[in-house]
Image (cartoon, rainbow, N blue to C red; front, top):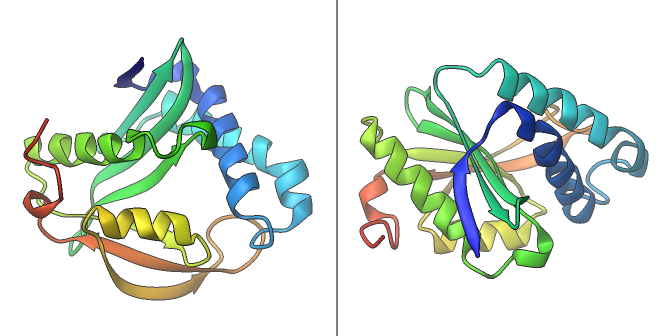
Length: 177
């Protein structure tokens, strides 16, 4: 049975491990093998330790557990952009549990939480090479707005697309708990 809860400080290692594993599985060829095999775990540990031990006021992180093991997580920053609203910075599900509705529930939980705080829209950036994630975000009602090249993650320039939900009320499944 899956359980959802807010992340706590000590979750940073488990979140970092899941995040690194997800990148290793999905971004081979996008990032260098050296980065994925030797650097990504330490880099993600630093990021998640900072996020959880010194959280920003607009940060919301939820994890999903099975038998006390974190198998998915989402991290958002409420009101990150004046035009696009809340940023879904990360959403990762352990590959063993993809297709079981966890990602959808995380998206809906985030949308509800942001609505409760007065948010009306959300967006995220997805690497254009991640066709599986793009299909998921489109099923969840997101629409592509722009594609750019950037150097903000990993060790190579990436191409990413902004997906946008201008009205959270229209997200499929949002009004059904």
